[in-house]
Structure formats: structure tokens, C-alpha cells
Image (cartoon, rainbow, N blue to C red; front, side, top):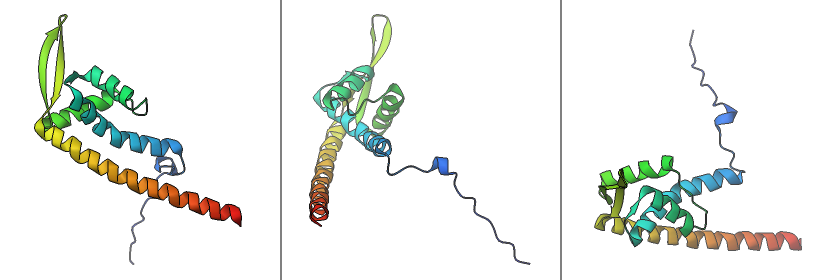
Length: 139
């Protein structure tokens, strides 16, 4: 007798809904958060809270990183040598200031080039979809 293994099917609740605007917005914002953290640090050194607010302002609210998002990214950047962190005491509280390193500046410039390429492809895709819609409307 040959035994066959049954592969459990993933629970439908765990599968992403690719037709959901929220799914795509969340995926895009996760990717962009790292880029925009580099972006605002490119301007000047900042504290974590200031970084979050600057990202929100820079993106007109499109990306609003939370502490749960921003500090793990900053730790990752620090471990990779993309930022340095200096602690200081302000009004009796310790605050950390993050500064972009030369490696971080290089990463930001590479990110700009990569996102420009993606933007070009998205623009071409949008034109293609618009042409399809125009053809469909004429039928």
C-alpha cells in the first residue's frame, strides 16, 4: 500500500486579495518607506520622530511610517552602515540622531534611479491600459 501525503490548502483568509486597493497600497508603502527614510535623511540628520513626520510631509501623507516600522528600518540601516546613530540627552531624555553615511547617500541615489525606472514602466503601462480602454469603448 502506497501512502500519499496530503498537502494542506492554505486558509483562504491568509491569501491576499489582489483586487484590493488596500493590498497594493500597503505593499507599495512598505517598499517606499525605506526609500523615503533615506530621502529625508539625505536632507539632514534627524531623530526618529522627526524622520516619521518628514516622510509624511514629503509624501503628502502617502507614507506615514509608525514607530513599529521606522525603528527596525533605522536599526537595519545602522547595521548595514547606511546611517550612524548618536545619542544625546535633551530635557533629561535620551534621543538618538540618525545621520546618513556616504554609503547611505549612494544607496539613496541608486534607489532614485530604480524608482525612476519603475515610474517609466508604470507610465508606459498606464498608456497601454488607456489605449485598451479606448479600443474597448469604440467596439
